[in-house]
Length: 271
Image (cartoon, rainbow, N blue to C red; front, side):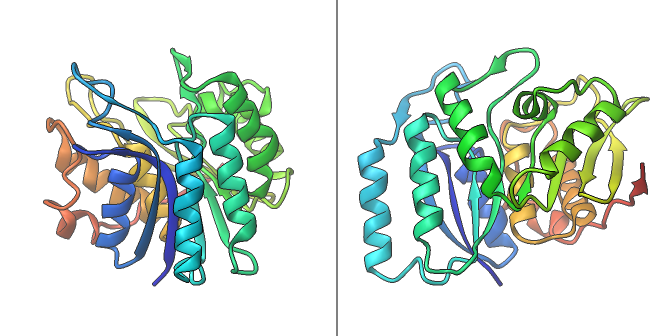
């Protein structure tokens, strides 16, 4: 099993950010070290929410203590999620570069924004993520908005999305771009897995508009990929978790672990 260091947001109640990532990984048997970039009561989409970004100095002190205790020596995978400022991006980069592992695997969930709201984070943070962090990744899991923003390319059609992801693959050491919710037709959703040589589609049926899907799905998916599950298997687990959580306020990660951890893989088709 892996030792995964995850740096993202944290909530006291519910399952988003680290509060989704950690239980998913732990249910699969992995060791998780958590670095919270924010401390919040809950997802800000609820009526009441309180909390703030974690001061960068505090994060650096936590990292120094972890290092002094020898707890960074066995980290083999780093997962980055919500980074609320350019300074937090710098913390993530410094952390990756100081890990004693010769080449830790880096999975980036580029939490930038979505349609129709646009960027969720300050432009300076988004620029730092695009210009300084993305090229260090092995795998990146953008949604359509994030892929378009990172590449400056349109992602309206499946062909445009594939070409934008191929362009991203040409940067740095990226091995795979996994695009979430690509522009499939006919009410389908799923993933588009793009490498330097292949474009592979994984299609599933989208939830209907009256079926409430709890927050945190993207965080759970990035955790499944960080756990080194094949893309189709990761999507199968995610779909089982989503269907087991429909109508609930929060993902039912622990309550339905026996269901989603043993879910079947989703089949694929080459595009």
